[in-house]
Length: 277
Image (tube, rainbow, N blue to C red; front, top):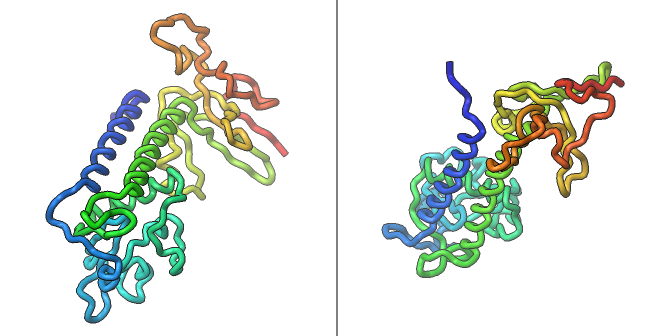
């Protein structure tokens, strides 16, 4: 029987992932030999059309030969607008108009920067890196500009926030939830959050938290959030944030956390809360 990883292991893996990605970003953007520098006008010739010298695209100033994926990027293909230019912004926004196919990412959020980093990992893995674009992200010497340094800092910050989010989900996993027009709402806790039929595979991976306890439903109030959301709370043992030098506790798990609230009408230690219409 395979054992599911514990909270400590998962958080440890998250910390390692942050360190590995930071090192990878440094290797991607640090000076190295064997690549070519392009000005935007030169890169524009590489759109994969008749007589063009190749089929390239750029992301955050890094240029990749996407000839092996020609059916996606050649003229007339769905992603042809990415060819021959750096359209970093459109990887996040999905705006494939001329106004959207640009490299300005200065107003993107931390999570959107992580989306760019995921795309960068994809191209690093699947296509050949051939050079850098002189402009927003690289200077004429091929070295990163201050704007690229800022992008790197935001990606690193986003990775740290993901680590913190994982830590919170291990402490307060999301409830299972269902709603019926005839029966009303129901929240309940189980050792792994079930996934509704309309949820995607991605949400399955991000929302399911396995553990060795079940817990009870509670409202979690977060700063900046308009509404609380349902989480499962451990009911026995010491609080999650108790320090090792304080062995005494009330054996109530995290029930006394100040950001939690009860569901009116639900028994305090019930693992299921139902709210008929």
